[in-house]
Image (cartoon, rainbow, N blue to C red; front, side, top):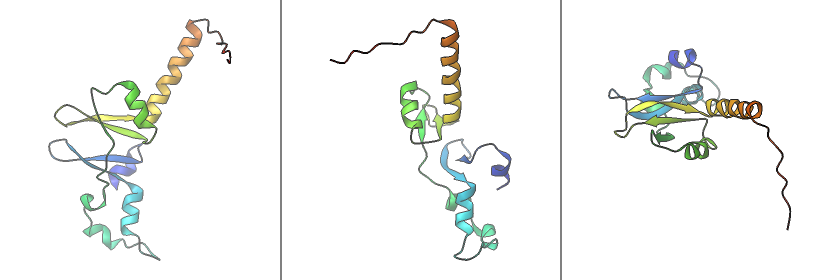
Length: 123
């Protein structure tokens, strides 16, 4: 809980001792794990392990992925975990980061070049 409350991400990767991805965990996952029908069971938190709460279906991409493939995967996920050829965690790529860079690129192109509207003729 402490780690999740101090980072700017809503979900974070869970790594093993060798920096390989085991899953992802989020605050809602933890809350759902300790919720009863009509109350929150705080005593359950002492018994739960990260492995019991985390989601093992992690969106992973290798470092060799092409940008187009990354964009396609980001349609369905807010972030992707990047791993090297041996499966070691290298970091994450977020949808927000990609959109920010694409936005910057579009503005740069607009300022650097004379962009003209393309006329499409229907046949």
